[in-house]
Length: 302
Image (cartoon, rainbow, N blue to C red; front, side, top):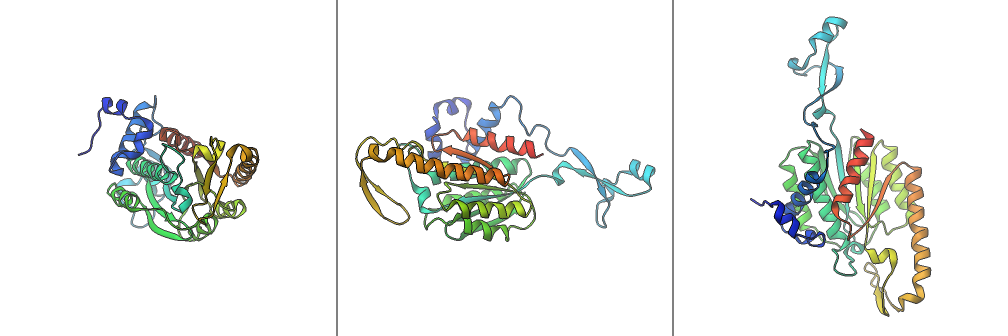
């Protein structure tokens, strides 16, 4: 059994978390440490607490009938419990080649995204949420429907363990396809660098919102993709097309920053317009921050 003491946690730095193997150990390390560090867990008392009533339907267990309400209304109502109203979430992880990028000692964007997905799976299933997983690039590569059994996390972790980057980015097209496939309403969590046509991407996210889903997006970028703080002349390679260019970073930094800021602002405005929660994180950002943003978003929606 893989367990870590508090002393072990103190010895493991943030940038080493993504190297912990197996992935299940990494997820448990991140989530358990995160919840321990919260002054008050947002999930406190979240198990099987009474939530509300709903009309009795044939086949419902009679033990859940609220007889006091029946005495007042002469109608059968069922006590609906919190576990019946828990979240149904689908995690979408981009495994296109651009996610393989890493500029220095930090994890690749894909490794960071995979760690975040594994941690979210552990957190959500531990709280009786139903969770599914989809991996995609130009098309859907793996699709696992949302289930709430604790044993389901091992299936999803196994998928993440075996996953590798490959293929070009077609986030927008993949989102449209998935919006018609995932079924009943719930929450969609997209983990991607979003380095794709912003109009197509926003259109795909809007498809989910139009279908009644809550949407939270984690845009994962390498720090150098934001600041372009390369120090010497280098050969730059576009991972998905293989095209290369030799350039002096200081000569193109201003133009690059302007293009990147324009791109990011277009994403932000589009997500805001369609009420999509967008969070940009870099691969040197502790996963705790991403988990906190997820929980904060969920509490607001609840």
